[in-house]
Length: 392
Ligand SMILES: *Cc1c(COP(=O)(O)O)cnc(C)c1O
Image (cartoon, rainbow, N blue to C red; front, side, top):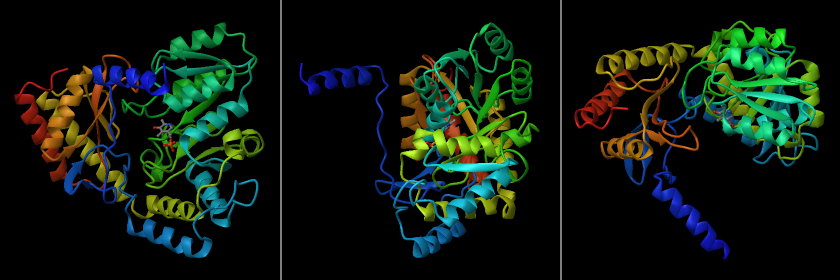
């Protein structure tokens, strides 16, 4: 069979299963009113949790740095692509997360793959929560270490697996805030088990950084875990910080090992310096505009309170990620399309992003939303509920 025939068959199958993905073309900045094909939608599906992606100070920092540094970084960090503003941002991120040092990666996916590859070998074991982000799973597989997936947030299951393992080194990796569920991993207990079983704990804080902890310093700080207890911290710049890129933070030695051994760090172009400057402005805004975290928490509480009285299929989440569990992929798609017709954007998350029969509407709230916009969402959901579309 020729290539296109093979692919056509696979694409058709995906369509038949209601799992086909489509890209929406946007025509303006990330903000609650998102423009697409000439129409404005009220958007509840972005990861711009603090509303910084379109913040005037972040934009101004990007523009000013482009004047100083130009656009492209020109090379990888190890050649001549590591600018003063990259270095400044690394220092600011280390300080923000309470770690000795940080090193920038070009994306969170690359950070996870590079980090696990740099730290692990075939004789090692990597232990991951079943619901970890795909980039952690891929990083674990690519590292060549033996990958085990423990039951979601099940510290006892993890401990048993660690005790049975003959691996030379053991690394435990978890999302701190689960990207499709919104719940927070039991970080204190995980740190204790890792200490008891001599395993290294790695946190992927893509959805916690900026939102959780003092001044948005992240989930490790919120849980009171220092660099000894949670030695490997990964955060991203593309979500609550509203920019692009990622970093690994920890001891000086860990960071130096990334620079020497992480292939996705070494063999890729550094993020544009202007993007680093924008990220630095966003980090400063975490302090200057701390009302953003507080306002977001209020919206989360308000949404949950009303959704609970409506008996909507909420999940056990107290973060900005507030999914409604629907189960069936075609149902989730149907609800997402009905909302879109009402001018509201919420993505239907379906397998393989989430386990089979756990398709959901992934609602996300941001500090840029107003209380009345959240009321609009709830009113639209009430309407669909009356039509019988929202039971799980
Ligand atoms: C988004 C995300 C990543 C990937 O980060 P990018 O910078 O978008 O590549 C990694 N881990 C988790 C948990 C994420 O949600």
